[in-house]
Length: 156
Image 1 (cartoon, rainbow, N blue to C red):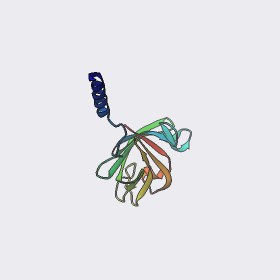
Image 2 (cartoon, helix red, strand yellow; image 1 turned 30 degrees about the vertical axis):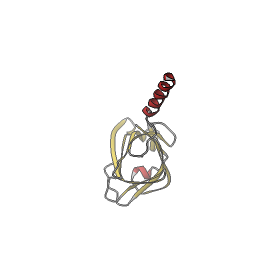
Image 3 (cartoon, rainbow, N blue to C red; image 1 turned 60 degrees about the horizontal axis):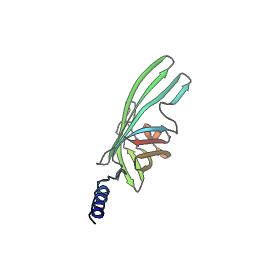
Image 4 (cartoon, helix red, strand yellow; image 1 turned 90 degrees about the vertical axis):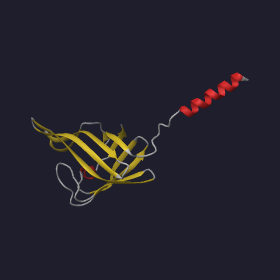
């Protein structure tokens, strides 16, 4: 009888000690892992084989207060000249079920030192450790919306 009791007690303690590894909120920081299905660096805005912008990193942060920020790092290449840069877009986010919507209101940073004069929107889905933003319905000049790309972010 004591062995059965001890086995039951140990089993109960182990069951209680397990932590859930599935996040219950989108709040957190995510790194870009795929840009239109390709890994980084992702070359885009190409004006030829030796003139392009390459995204080398992108981090998306969802804050508990409903704000978000995305910081993109990249490299402008023009022949043999290279220039490293980064910029940040900010805005607000909302969720409905697993659908997430990001908005950059007018007057906010809009990539490469610009300020958005009109609202930008992009939406997607959240699934535990992954946020996927999709080009369908994306509007406005903010890079995260203007890329018209599928962006996959993984929680870090």
